[in-house]
Image (cartoon, rainbow, N blue to C red):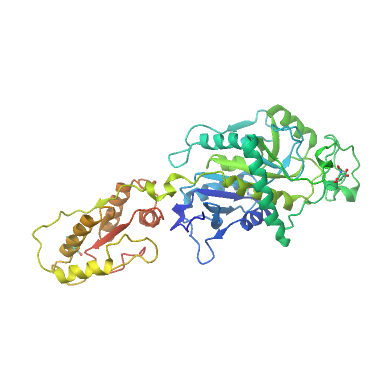
Length: 464
Ligand SMILES: *[C@@H]1O[C@H](CO)[C@@H](O)[C@H](O)[C@H]1NC(C)=O
Ligand SMILES: *[C@@H]1O[C@H](CO)[C@@H](O)[C@H](O)[C@H]1NC(C)=O
Ligand SMILES: *[C@@H]1O[C@H](CO)[C@@H](O)[C@H](O)[C@H]1NC(C)=O
C-alpha cells in the first residue's frame, strides 16, 4: 500500500542519507512516488541541505543529499535534517564502502558489489589507538525516536535463513529495475575486474589504474568469483567509520582483525549521534591502495536495492495510522451560552457552508468569515456554532485563537501547542506558529476547526 503525500515535513519518519551523487541517483531511481515535483516541503530557516521527498514501499522518505564526503559533512547534514524533519525515527546511510575479505557471519566470502548492513559502527582514525564503538543501544535516543532495540531485533531477524532468502530475492528484483535504466550504469562489471591483491602489495602508481600501471601482485584466491552468475550477498557486521579513506591493505587488516570489522566508510559516525541509523553499503573496493571507480555505480545500485528491500521489512510506526489518533482537543476560552436566541439564519448558513461531515484536511479546508461592526454578536454566533458542532461530532478538535494582536495570536497558539504537547513547543527557539500549522496539517491529525476571534485585518495571518 502506497502512503499518501504527507501534509508537511512532520509526516516523514525515515531519512536516507547519501554522500555521493551516484549513490543518491540509485536511491532516487527506486522511489515509487515523488512528492516534490510540484512544490517542495521547504525546510527550517538556516538549513542548507538539499532534499528529495517521495515514497518507497509503505514509507514516506526524505532523501538528504550531502555536499561532500566525510564525517564532518555527515554530522552537519544530519543535524539540519533533524531540525527540518523532527519526526525522523530511522536514518539509512546508503552508499558505497570498502570491504574486508574475511569470512563474515554467514560464512560467505565478500566480493565486490556485496552489501554490508551495520550491526554497529566503530569510529577509527589513523593515529588513534583505541577506536570508539557505537553499538546499537537499547536506550531511546530521545522521546521522538523509536528504541534502537527495534533496529536490533529486525537485523537479527533478517540474519535468519528464511528472511535472508526473502531479502536476497527482493534485492535482485530491485537491482534489475535499476539495471533497466541505462544511464545508471548498474551492470555487474565482471568477475575479472574484482581483484584483491595480497595486503602488503602496494599500488604501483597513483593516478593510474591497476591495468595502466600493470599491478601484478599476488591475488587472493576467491571461490565466489568462480560461480557462473554472481548475485550480491548481504553481510551483517561492524563497519569502521573514519575521517580519512582507508587505503592501506596492512592497516586495513590490522584494524579489521582487532575490531572484528568487515567494511570501511566515512559517514556513519557523523549520523550516529543524531538519528537511530543503519548503514547499508555496497562494496566498491577493498579499502586498499588499488582504488578504482569501476565498481562505484554497481555498488551504489546494490546498496540502494538493499535499502528498498530492507524497508519492506520495517513497519511504519503506529502514529502513521489514523486509528491511533489522539483525543480531540477543545481549546475554547468561553462557556456555552444557553440563553442565546435569534440569528438562526446566520447560524444555518454556517452549518450549511462549513458542513458538519468529517472534513479532510489539506488545501481544501473550507474557510469562512463572519464580519460586521464590533458588538453585533459575531463571537456569540461562532460560540453557538462550535458548541452545536461539538454536540453532533465529538471527534472534532476546536481551537480558539484571539486574533486582535500578534501577541494574543501567539499566546493562543502556545495554548494549542501545550494542549497537544507538540514536540519542541517549549523550546524558545522554535517557531510556534509554524509548529502548530505543521502539526495540524499532518495527514493523521484528527479533524479540527479553528476560530479566529476579534480580528480587524488579515495581516495577522501570514500562515493561513
Ligand atoms: C565536505 O566535503 C567536501 C567535498 O568532499 C570537502 O571539500 C569538505 O572539506 C567537507 N567538509 C567538511 C566540513 O569536512
Ligand atoms: C570468472 O567466471 C568464469 C565463469 O563464469 C570463470 O571461468 C573464471 O575463472 C572466473 N574468474 C575468476 C577470476 O574467478
Ligand atoms: C477585541 O480587540 C480589541 C482591540 O482590537 C480589544 O480592545 C478588545 O478587548 C478585544 N475583545 C476581546 C473580547 O478580546
